[in-house]
Image 1 (tube, rainbow, N blue to C red):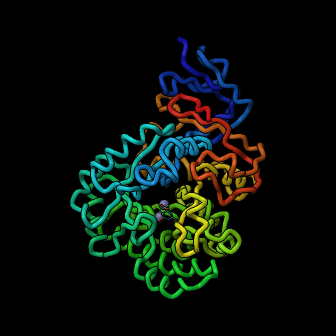
Image 2: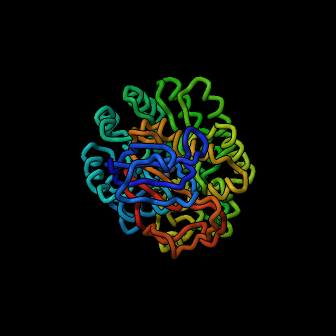
Image 3: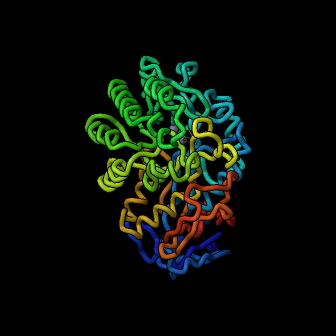
Length: 423
Ligand code: DOR
Ligand code: ZN
Ligand code: ZN
């Protein structure tokens, strides 16, 4: 038998360790995993030169902006940026224009997303108007998203009675409800108080820790009562993590954090200004330390980028006008591999956070390095040094808050459904 592709001379991430095994791929699927010498003949071979081959990594939180905001990003540029960053599967957030709140919206976005060079899933957003259509929406979405407070896009569900109804209806599907956990009333009150200030640090106070904490509390209580599967997006606070840790005893709950909260603090708001403006905002060093601790002890289940591209021109407006969000799908893995090299996290844990846990939580099928699964692979070079430069990025917005940062450990080759992507 001659297969389409073999990948040899690898350190293959297999059953939680690296083995000197190769992989044979045919028709987009893994057909053999064994010593190189025992692999079948192939039309094409990739020599990995001793690099580590991981299962294709997942980014469970991106904003690819199409339809509606394609000057910031689109499915072609966003997915190429993802693949460039070693990501083989993205889950796209609903706050496009239109938002994905109807089956029609989801089907239309699915059509546009055919341009994607990586695999994808789409979130459906829950708002007051579609709470009774949740069952139908579940057939076309990977998970549900609820904005408990207003952010980019402007839609929200900030009424606890409606939240209960939404969670209840979602609990009858097999889908997870993901929440943007900030409290609208607290944000509104604090925004009034701070918005006259010209100190960038005050942006963090305008969406304070209390806002995240109260929203997480409400979401947990609602999930407890409705038995909904809850995922808390982009957790930034020590207290929020404590609540989630406790809730894990009796609520089906997972949570995520993002590189911006792991590698930047509110001091970066002072240095980078609006380029570091995100919702929720960057927090203190103390919160950052808590995040790293909760990564090691397992409270944090997933690392996702919350890739939220805006143009440089949009970002360089007044602190209170500039849109919130930073690009990240392209840089998450290299930042995390640098952390592996610095012994801040083990590679095994990273594979859990960026592959095993998202696969399990969102029921992604056919992922993993096993015979019969789709051939999605991320080859990394742990020893290669890097410097992030805006000029090298494939995201349409062409900037990164980490421009100029240096480190070690890079994605090297991305294989999606058996195809090596040349970017
Ligand atoms: O910073 C953010 N940007 N937070 C969000 O909730 C939305 C996102 C975006 O879409 O720009
Ligand atoms: Zn969010
Ligand atoms: Zn987001």
